[in-house]
Length: 372
Image (cartoon, rainbow, N blue to C red; front, side, top):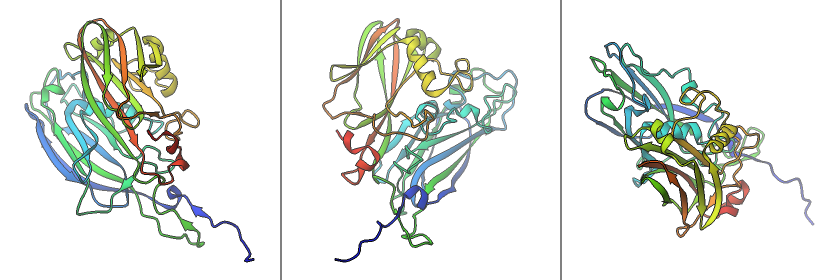
């Protein structure tokens, strides 16, 4: 019989590959009283797409006593979306404030509140200037590269669409001269690894479960005074995050916090998943995120925002994600949120679901057992 040696070493993808960052677009547009469409902008073809980094800087305005709206400065973007080569949205379309919440509560990195970034500055009372940095997330586990997607076909590129909001979406008291807004986009990707390393060890050529795709979508549901049963229509895949944003009839989140039920229940196919008392829900959000500053402050929770996630982490720190608790749904699954609202308003639902690739090693990353 032939001798059998030790099994060949396969270097994991995230160790075999290299992080890659490059600029992809730099555009400056004067803020205006009306919305302004930008793009779509092609994403450069390179390796495996992880994120698109968005650097937004408003400058050159003038005035005194400038005030900001509740969702500013993020609200300078009225709509943003990342779409694939077929035009299917993978992230969005939703607002800049929605994207801020996705970055903060989506479970991608430990330091997730963009208000803590050294790049961040809120709306200045002197001239209305501001700056922030956000990501359009594709990869959902940086430790493994899970969720990063092939991006090598320059003839069929990914695209980013952006619409700047009217100035009154950003300012309560508007600058006497409106600023210009500079938007710089960067591609964040993994390189394509060589077949072997310098020692001749075989290296993984693709991320684990390549083709598994994370989607972020949005729906806004009207709520009426009294008891509501709100059906969540985004089903058919593995739910990773649910973000609920309640606003009152005046479209205020601070008012929406008072409108939101004192007791809510989340059901899946008539099975009760969670029954929350409102303060306990906020406590659970604190426990999972560590956000302990006052509401609306940097490193604090947000008015009217309630988050339910199914992505525990190895040590409680976002970025080292376990994949075993996603909520599996089918097209016939009935997910509902119930509760008694104290007044009419709206409930925006941001749903993050994962569609696993066809049966290609998904069991190695804990997705196979959850396929709906």
